[in-house]
Length: 194
Image: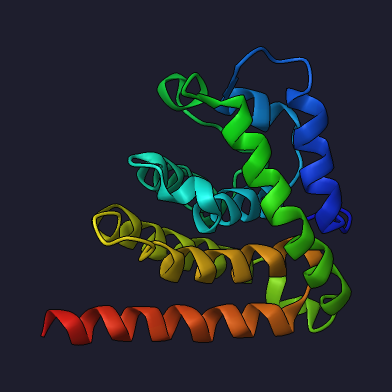
């Protein structure tokens, strides 16, 4: 985790990266916006898109869940930069829908940017980054089955968003909130199964 990334810069970087695209945007176009930056912005963008109106489109939450799973797994493994298979990198979405989703999440990022700041940073540094990655993996596993229930993917995606926000902003308080939200999400899931 190198430098602090401002949340609205994440959206700006993606908007700039897809500006010259035609009518579609590939996952690789979004990845190119981040180069080899840390996992936080990528996980945050995936979870924010799952929470946004784009998450209501069939199969999109599952695709985002797979991305979160892959990124979280690599975070657990301690990889320096993310890798995704070609099948995922070449998946395309309507540019208009991606732009609308980015437009919808940018005001939220601006609000959160005022709340988060570096504190309790030991909670977002190794080896704790592996714990965050593992929890993101667990939450990502909830996304595909919840896709059949309208807007239910918001629950695990919010947990991932809080944890990735913690990584991005080096905010340990946000990580603690993410841990609490993830525990509540898992407790609700277990309760509903039993």
